Image (cartoon, rainbow, N blue to C red):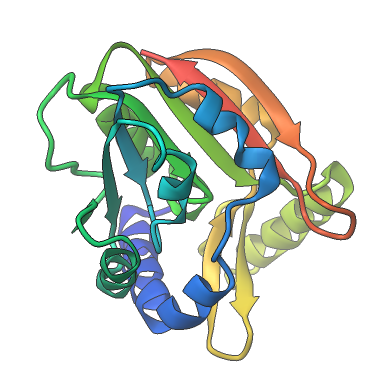
Amino acid sequence: MKKEYAIYLLDKTKEDYNLIADDFSRTRNKNWEELNFLAKNVVTNTRILDLGCGNGRLYELFKDKIVSYCGIDISEKLIEIAQERYPGVMFRVGDALNLPFSDNFFDKAFGVAVFHHIPSKEFRLRFLSEAKRVLKPKGQLFLTVWYLPPGKKILLIIKNLLLKIIGLSKLDLGDSFVDWGDKTRRYVHYFSQSEFRDLVERSGLRVKEVAILKRPKGEESNIALVATK
């Protein structure tokens, strides 16, 4: 993917989430049950960074523990919603590709359903590099991305390949657009488990585990990855 188009997609993602912020927040009032394991990895006095925090719902997993939490998101409207939901909690508008924090600052960083919205390998590696930079030595990064079953992934790749051949697509082969009703189409990249692992390892982080998180019947699954600095 050309850098200029990737920048356009980054800007589009910000615009999309500002556009759908209220609807998005209403459909994200609670955390998925399969994310409860994240809380087990957090102890007292942990410094937590929530990358792409949205309406701040991940804070629910940690609010009964004595932690230092900060949520960051590119969407101004989602940050406003998060601040209204959780007064006194640290939320700020910011770019995960250029984090406004010093080196070796956080114990844990979480990125739930955000990494698949980052276009191009260049910007994904920058995301990972920034997460690694702000983590303390032996700090942990937890990421989840949407999972597309192999059969559907192959069809998507074939479709994108044909469109690229005839000059009708600027997307990479695992990319797609996902409708949010009739309001917009969000950019997403569908990772395989091996692609996900290889990219994170390329950033210099050590991958501890990659697994598919099963969701309730009829709902799409996610891939979860745990890495250490």
